[in-house]
Image 1 (cartoon, rainbow, N blue to C red):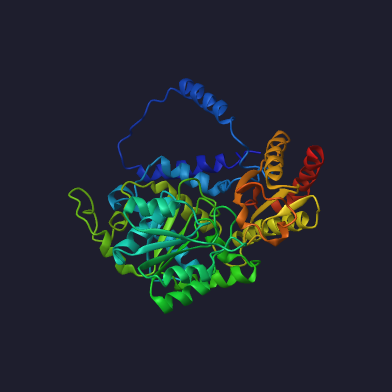
Image 2: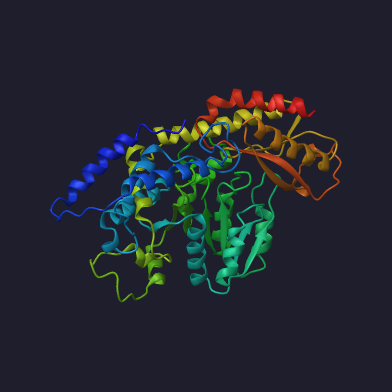
Length: 448
């Protein structure tokens, strides 16, 4: 199950890379293979203590295996170990980062922009909010109460005012609640989440942009999870409208290490106005002298960054271009099909309740019972028994005031309810849904 045939390609590529340095005097590094083997086998033993994130029967958290080309390119680059802070630390990988980031920007309809890779979505969002704070000093950052907690925490770190906005029963930012907050004044930036971490819900970006024109604030799109779905051809109407409007926002974050098939950590931040680069201006007495060209370290808050991440991303996008209708885009559609399939089965089965129809590929559901506390108890049992049968799900806590009228026949005896959460990120989930449903059905009957 753990693909290894491609290691032969890595060996061939490594030999090719080595020939690029044939003009250097020979330099050998002694390697104690026996000791190395002993430790590596110990590492393999340690790593067995993991959930099978790579397998279709893992349908829990947001964990998607890197594509083989990403693994190979990353490993190959590690032999050089480039640092994409300055060009003298990674000439080739810096150019590859610029090309790869430009392709991501083009996916959102931008050809003029400023952007770079980061160690992940948290750092990418930090940079976006840092720029927002610089451009709108003293003003508040707004995000929905279903947005990632990192926005409130980052705002605190940056010394920025932050406030959350209520969501509707679909997990999307309530546009009326948003306008009520904006009317009070001093709002500098609204964060629109296109694919919330909890449920994959898509905020109403079109309506948010209408308010932007009326009140004048910045819009930052956090699409760390959902960004690549702009290529999918099977979004619902609200989702399609939101993604089609992304080109009108001020900044975007997307994580290639989620749906972009990359190893951790690889995030990306983009700014529509390249002039925000002036905010990064700083002096360094020991870097930036190898070229008159712009160094990535001059437009990033991070210093040392793994050039291997850029190499892996570049290689993946070379093999799987981000074109609508292409292989990469179709794989996203399969993940969404799997979520819609599971949602349909759950909705038509009286034993289950679903929280909301999925916007992307995440389904929130629970076994039906007479009270919220009982549902929470059954969810924990489902989680435990499923894991014993190698079906790995996740748990998700929902505030009971988030539930719609369809839950009216259930006694609300707690402030929150624990549900099941299924992230169907792998395209293979579409083909495995019969197997997954068979296990869900069997486990439910056992628990009942």
